[in-house]
Image (tube, rainbow, N blue to C red; front, side):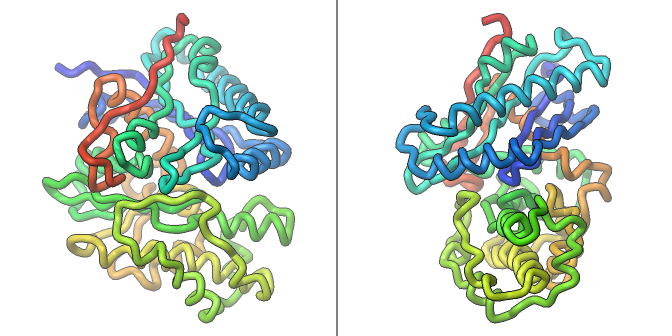
Length: 370
């Protein structure tokens, strides 16, 4: 019988909201037993430090370089994960010695597949030593070294979720974080996946610049505005949307310049529509239309984006919670699942998800006792 690992997944997404943790018992294949989840938000000052790191990372030429604000930001990410995991274990009354593994994503500050460069900050070895649990980390590098895009990584977990749920296939998972990505799951096929567009990134940046808010809470601003179809057409004319999957992109790959002259509500409405329409622009690349779209990630809680998807999608649009899944926790669960697959040498990515030449595993392992 395959070994069942007790694993914690730790995820900080491109929205830079905070540290998401999720407990999962899994064999890295079909067994999925969900445990507690928790989120630990970053403060405004911490988000500002991470944004400075993202700005500085534009000039990186080596993935291990940490000039300027990158080293303090990496120390911050590591420290916040240590604090979060200690609190999580104490709150859930779980002893560290009963946890086999942590899957640690780190904070992405640069993702440039055209340069073969992806950088996630956070010290996996320091995390392992501090919490006393082995840590699997740096899960993107092997894929890029083998000719892949290095993203998205979650599709193999999406497939496991779909198969475990018994949902009618084909099914399209849409994760809306700072960047939106999608996974198409069909019977007897490797998943098809790609990054699909800006997710929450442009809308979050707009709200911070114009109102000081971290996001458009409950989509209130976007719902009060009107979509500018001319600006939306300009946004959708980006050549990225004509490229077939697999493909991936950086958080800062798109510009909000087309909405610069609009009122804040109209700009927000247009950017929410852009996120939705960018996702749907990828449906013609799929082998057949999905029977259902399942939303997860922070954007699944934005009614303006959800409404825009529902208005234009050719099938039902459901939230992960409708299936008993926690949409905010799916990526953290995925990194627990990926960590187990990493230590077992199972593939994390496939030609149909990242463009890698052949299915590839990956990741580094930091031992708790070293």
